Amino acid sequence: AQKVTQAQTEISVVEKEDVTLDCVYETRDTTYYLFWYKQPPSGELVFLIRRNSFDEQNEISGRYSWNFQKSTSSFNFTITASQVVDSAVYFCALSEVNYNTDKLIFGTGTRLQVFP
Amino acid sequence: DTAVSQTPKYLVTQMGNDKSIKCEQNLGHDTMYWYKQDSKKFLKIMFSYNNKELIINETVPNRFSPKSPDKAHLNLHINSLELGDSAVYFCASSQGASGSLTGELFFGEGSRLTVL
Image (cartoon, rainbow over all chains, first blue to last red):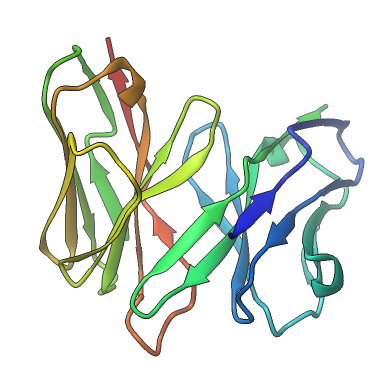
């Protein structure tokens, strides 16, 4: 069965600290996609990144970076020099790609609080 | 123009009532979804439709009835509302057609339903 585990329920840091959010997934598919979404206090779901299963290159986007390791089935997310605006719930998700529909399986989320 | 729009954003109602949430997407996508986010922030798929055809129905009580009049709209009707139905309901869409699956979902802003 497909599953996404975000073991960290809540993380608190002080501004400018680096923080890593962990994500471990389970799937039998050879082709799949992994995602990170951000949900700020306003409630909307903001897409951050998509990574397909054949691309293990790490990605950096500004202060955000992602480390995808198939060997450990992990897709971790690091925020460098965190800011108060990074405070949100972050979801890791795995897509189950079927013939004519995509189904996202979400982890339980990690609430990140960044204090000034 | 909002890509995926839901109405209403907030809905407060009494137990036993029937209510509907509407969703429209202007992305030209083939597939639309309803996700439920409970009070613990857990996000779970309820339904998906591809070109007006029901594809995924994730053991949701039959008090919940999705309706897709065309591929740009997916409405959610809930009969005999219960306290446990209180949640945020997210509509989403994806390309979803065979040969163009990307796993990426575009979410609406959510509709917060409170049942008293």
